[in-house]
Length: 142
Image (cartoon, rainbow, N blue to C red; front, side, top):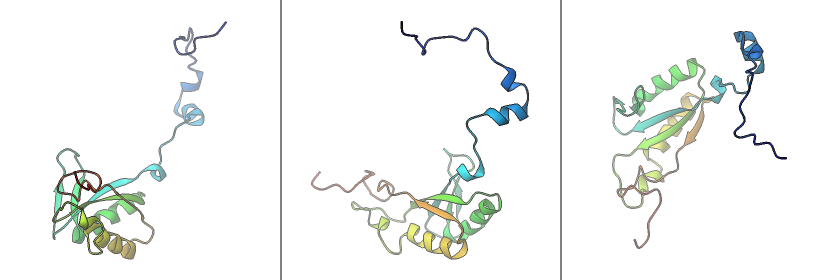
């Protein structure tokens, strides 16, 4: 006879492991720490820019001359990992700014590596932010 584990209900809920914070901390399976966090950082062309992204309260687009202060604040708070998203000045069919040696993300990586050697940098490799058609890859012949 098979037991239907998916639909079974507990008759008694074992609360002894939830009585106080010390016990809950001892037996919990999932812990989120600063080591688990990756902060998204949006880099835009231009100077003296810090624009809030309306759909992401508290998240901003930063120009290179401003992003250093933000990264320093993150590092001081214990967040040592970022993922960079580029906001290019111009978009084209091939997303050429994504592989341009002087593209905004390439400049940001050089700046951040020089000024924050302990920062772990992840980059977004999706092409949609660099292409004028918004697709995630390069399109050949429609």
